[in-house]
Length: 300
Image (tube, rainbow, N blue to C red; front, side, top):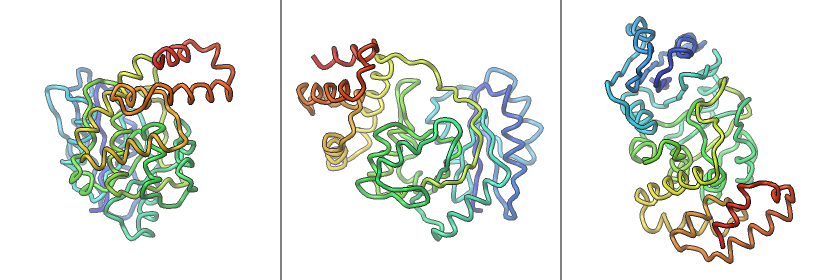
């Protein structure tokens, strides 16, 4: 079986019905699996998914685990060679599996691969192009790290080679609710020689994102620091040195990454100040942004 469509859900009673229906009604000629992992929902989610038990594999638990672990449960329980996540507030288009299949077939069904496409919301292309490559091309090696230093790729609508991600330990751990485990997981995969492809096709409709909330500088800083602290534990010393070297030597400056480097005493404050000055010169409007002054203060 090539594909499992995995639906991790927590309190999704308002939207999961459409998500299940889109997963079951794929215009695809080959067998595939639909799996739901109900993460201790406290609303009416269980009652909504129960009638589908003969057509869908349902994993239910009484307690609630972190989001990254619910995605790992899907990985462990899935039967498909590739797992496509569809969060319970998103909808796959009916031809999505066929489009994934056609692209992967052209690549001879690679074993260490991540594939995704365009999006009407939080499109990843602005990050992707920093790797120096266009759409419908394979990105691997050192440059594959760079796009994911700018942010994570939300798993919904993304196709992962299941066995290789499981062998890697699955999605990275996190201690905070907003820790960007998607970001650290993609970095770990890039360092472990996975290949990545962003297609010019669109596979799903993201109606909204549960993480689309206004976050202050301090909260994001703490979350990113937690993510990289967890990632450090999952890398070898050589891999960790490679990651730090890439962050320091690439042209991208991210205040949250540099906050991690400063706390770990991997860069001097003077290096960060240079980046902040360049940033202000390029975008003078930042002088009216309170978070920018918080960023400056952290480097003093």
